[in-house]
Image (tube, rainbow, N blue to C red):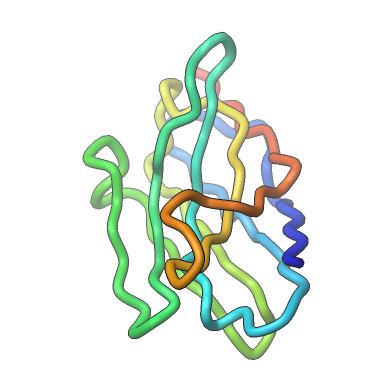
Amino acid sequence: QVQLVESGGGLVQAGGSLRLSCAASGRTFSTYDMGWFRQGSGKEREFVAVIRGTGGSTSYAESVKGRFTISRDNAKSMVFLQMNSLKPEDTAVYFCAARNLRVSIKYDYWGQGTQVTVSS
């Protein structure tokens, strides 16, 4: 019911910045919590940030707090992840995801991912 497409990944020097975008299609976008996750090569997918469907409150993984900012534009059905002060350990495929807490706890919808590579 919800389709997600990420963009904005690329290669960046340590200390640099990138802005990831996620375009969503589907009904009642504003109802969904929108999250960003990442998965390094050979590692499990981990939570990065979430912005709530109600009120727009945000939460971040400790590893990115103070460096990353998640935001959304419900009018455009888009979610963003501003990444500053990037570190080599931020290298991963970044995924956006959506969930409707009225339906399930887990994120039911996922984008295809966009590669972020931070060089040292």
